[in-house]
Length: 392
Image 1 (cartoon, one colour):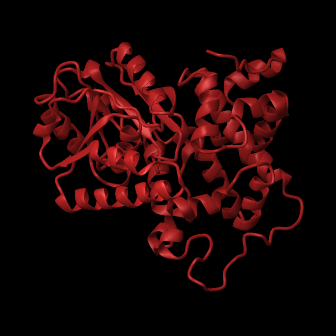
Image 2 (cartoon, helix red, strand yellow):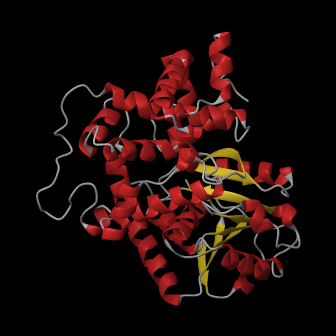
């Protein structure tokens, strides 16, 4: 049953993400004020929600009364003035620092001093966005994943200026919204977009070297429990979107070779081979002959060992840098991107010494800093330790 509250959240941006977050909040019983400068976007958002609610009623997940109440809890406007009663604001607009800062500067003059301001950015510095506010201590990141109504994870990111009490409040709210919140430091990519880079980057490197085909790489990763292979997933996400995230993380980490973008992916973007949405990516979706995703044959274990070792290395490094707790790192990857198990759990199961051997073999082969093992793995292997995955 839906429950009513007196809490009101303002959502800025009526695109797919903003509308999805609005639905999540309304289903949790919150009143929602959805703002977009485009009346057309607001009308499309309302029409899409009506379709979604009708499907939920057909599937007996909502009653007609609940569907009507949910939709009535979302009010749509083009002017920021309607945000005055909000307890929480979540911005979900274009990934442009200057545009976001201008919007928050306007909102700050309208809402009360107790209202928490949050950005849904996936790539910009939360600390940098907070710096232009009069009250940066009430600013933080709430990074939902698309589609917001279906994806469980929300990354809760504290800026350097954020009052920790606001992080606690938002963490509790996300739990009440039936989401899985994880706390992350304000670093490039936060948790998921940082830890997941080798899943794509190393897969692309393997194909670039013609050591395996996209189908073979996908088959190898699915053989150890991943629901989709990296090339299938990049085609689903869109090569333009995935490439842009990689470039953003690479630049934000001062061009660390661990995050170097792939020329193959760049050329796909330039060719307009973006994946499913364009009819062609690493596979074809336009009815024309293309590489089958089931044609892989031969010994493929080296592929998943190579990619998983780099994923574990990234998780271990994030833990040592205190980007998040071990528990939240595990939740982020299992609930956020549906990994078959947490990467630190995987390290324990595989054996940290074996992970280290794999990384050192790659570093010896290529002589690149891209494969440098996280110091914590060396220390743990020497002491025969395992990652402590208990409650933080």
